[in-house]
Length: 153
Image 1 (cartoon, helix red, strand yellow):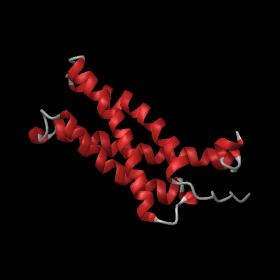
Image 2 (cartoon, rainbow, N blue to C red; image 1 turned 60 degrees about the vertical axis):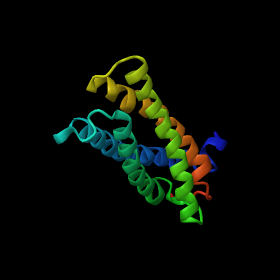
Image 3 (cartoon, one colour; image 1 turned 90 degrees about the vertical axis):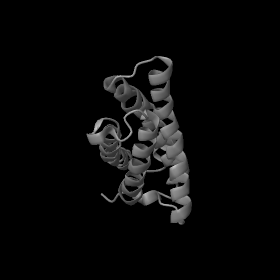
Image 4 (cartoon, one colour; image 1 turned 45 degrees about the horizontal axis):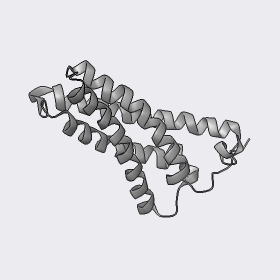
């Protein structure tokens, strides 16, 4: 348990996890909202390009997530170099995006499930769950690795 919390109290670690979830919730709304707007919104800008729509929506949500995670969820574990941290954050999110896009590609192109519901379940359901687990572990142990601040009682 000590390794998981990296020296934090259980309460501080749980608060970090809740904040990570809240930031992820906001980023999720941005991701899903933009994905659906691009695919199915007025003019169906990318109506026939689900993978492109997903890449764009994830890119925007990554910026939202970085700001929220850096300045709130993992604020105590910031690296000294903001640029290096951002590069690592983007790299981790490319991995998370690849997971979501792979789920969408398999569903849409391999399984032939092309309805809006199927695309959303694959990309924003299955892909999101797998990608979120991957992101949390990487953020905690690779991106925001500074010494955590101890919560004062």
